[in-house]
Amino acid sequence: MKGQSSTPTVHGPVVDDQTRCVHYHSELDVVAIRFVCCDRYFPCFECHAETADHEARRWPRSSWHERAVLCGVCGEELTIADYRLVDACPSCAAAFNPGCRLHAHLYFETSAPAER
Image 1 (spheres, rainbow, N blue to C red):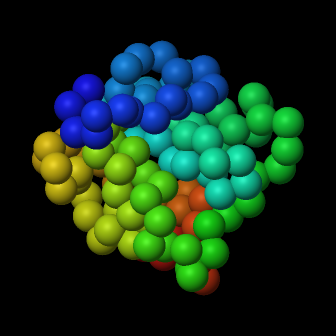
Image 2 (image 1 turned 60 degrees about the horizontal axis):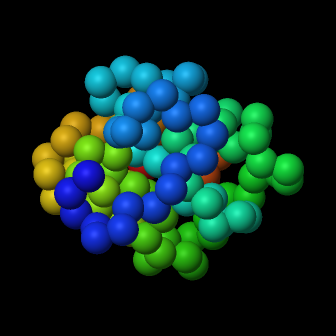
């Protein structure tokens, strides 16, 4: 992958080198989230639930400046705040799955499930 000199490891049942997993593997499913509870990247909340030995915690709003979203195409790490403002990677223009917004409340403190 381009971008970072050392691309982080993505954990869980990953099916390709662009972070797609057994649960989400469309052309647009190319992000992994670093979970605040364990400081490890997973493609989705289901991968974390199946392979981590603890419950997931959500990123508090006060930490949205942290780089916690990985573009699986180029390896760029985005801050949570930046990721929530875009529909594609600002580094390589790879489109992100717009359906991921429906799961944002599982990763980040939000006021509503579909809040961007």
